[in-house]
Length: 176
Image 1 (cartoon, helix red, strand yellow):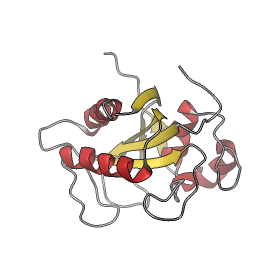
Image 2 (cartoon, rainbow, N blue to C red):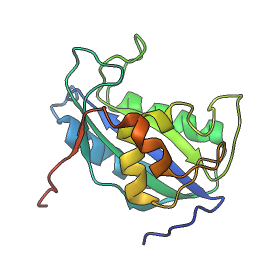
Image 3 (cartoon, rainbow, N blue to C red):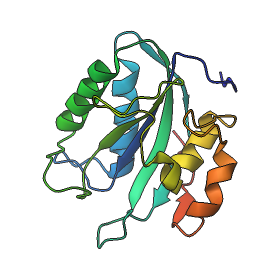
Image 4 (cartoon, rainbow, N blue to C red):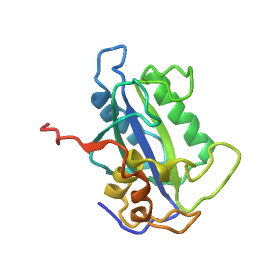
C-alpha cells in the first residue's frame, strides 16, 4: 500500500551497504536482510520499500559503490529508541564504527519521523544531509512521492537539481 501524504506516524529509513558481511552476504543481500529486521521492530510495520539503487560514495572516495534504498515504516516510537535499534541491526550485520564515512556492511539512517523537526538530542530530524544526497532522495521519491521537507516545505523535486551530478542508477529488479 503506497499512501501519498505523510502522516505523523510515517517513518523513513535509508538503507545502504557497500561491503559484504563476514558471513558472505553481498551488500544487496544485506540490505534485504535489513528490511526484514526493520519489519520485526515492535510497534512498526513496513509500508513500502523503494527500488534499490547503486551509487557512488558521497563524499567521493576509493570505496566500492553502495546499494541504497529507503524503507517507509508506519508506527509511533521514540526517536532515540529507534536509533538504538538501528544501531543494534547494524552491529548484527557486522558494522564496526571506525572513521566517518568508512565503507560498511550496513548503514541505517532515520531520514524522517513524520513532520518532526529537532536539532537535539540525537537523532537530528529530519536527517540533516538527506536533501543533499541523490541516494536518499530518489528512493524516498519511490516510497513517498509527495514528501515535503518539514524544515523548508520544499518537495523532493526541488532538491534534485543540486544532486544531479551524483552517480546513481536503479538496480535491476530481483527475480525471487
